[in-house]
Image (cartoon, rainbow, N blue to C red; front, side):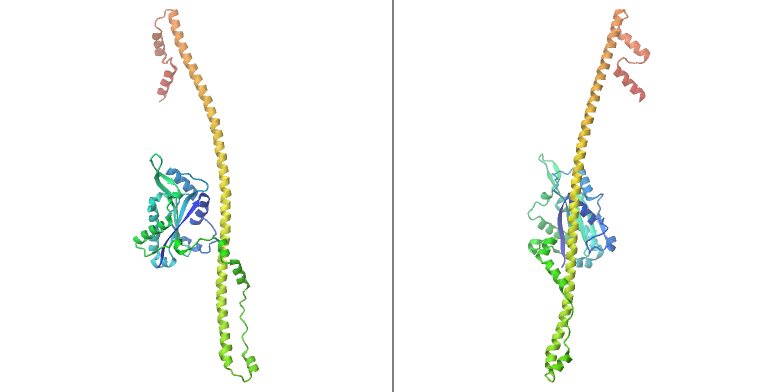
Length: 388
C-alpha cells in the first residue's frame, strides 16, 4: 500500500536562489544522479513564477501589502514536497498522476485559507526516479491589526504556530486526497517512525562510514585455490574415499558459494560508499552556494545602504534648492504686488493733481482701449484663456 506524502521545508531569503535554480531546472549540471536530463521534457508546471523566487516574493509583498516584520534570519517562504512511491504512480498511470498533483495543488490553495495568489511556483518533476511536486508558497496568515482592520501578514512562525502543525498537515492532506478517490495510506510522522534527518557528516559518524570504506577497498576477491584431489589420493593411498565425497567436495562447494555471495556484497557496499561520497560532494557544493549567497547578501545590503545614503543626500540637496526657489518666488510676488499698488496710487495722485476726474473710470477706459489689465494676476489669467 502507498502513502500520501507531503513534507514542508522553510526557507530564508538567502535560500531562494538555490531552490529556484533546482526547481525550475535552471542548472546545466546536477550532482543528483537520479536526475535523467533526457526525461526533463516530461516535467511540467501547474504554476510558473513570473520572475525568480526573490523578485516574485518582493512583487507579491508589495502587491498585496503584506504586513509583518521581516529580518535577515526570518523564514519568508515554505516548500511542500508532495509525492508517493514509484509503484503508486506506475499503477495509476499518466493521467491519474497529473490529477494527483493538480488535486494536491488545490489542497494547498485551500489549506489554512492560504489562497492560490500566495503560491509562487508549483513544478512537477518527472525526470527523477519517483514523480514529485515542488510547491513554493508564502506563509501568509489572515488576521487583524491593533485597530481591528483585516490584514494579510507574512509570518512563518504563526502559520506553523500549533504544536502539532505537521501532524495536522499530514491528516488534512491524507483526508483531502482520499476524498478525491486516491487509494492511499496516511504518511507516518517521525514521532511514530523514530526517523531523524541526518546530514552527511552525522551519517558517516554514526555508521563508521570511513572504516567501512577502507574495509571495502582492502577486500580481495580472489577465490581460494581448490584442493587438488589427485594429490590427496596419493597421500591417502587406499584410505576411505568417503572423506573426499563427504568433507572435501562439500567444503569446496561452500567456498565457491561464499565467494559468490562475498562478491555480490562487495559490489553493494561499493555502490553504497559511492552514494555517500556523491552526497558529501553535494553537501559541500550546497554549503559553498550558501556561503556565496551570504557574501552576495552582504554586498546587496552594502549597496542598499549606499543607495539610501545617496537618496538622503540628493533629497537634502533638492529640498534646499526648492526652498531657495520658493523664497525667490515669494519675493517676486511681493515686488509685483507692490508695483501694482504703486501704479494705482500714482493714477489716483495724477487725477487729483490735475483734476482729471474719477481715477477708476480712467483705469477702466485705459484697460478697454488697450485691451489690457493693470492687475497683473487678471492679465495673466486672461492671456492663459486666450491661449487655450
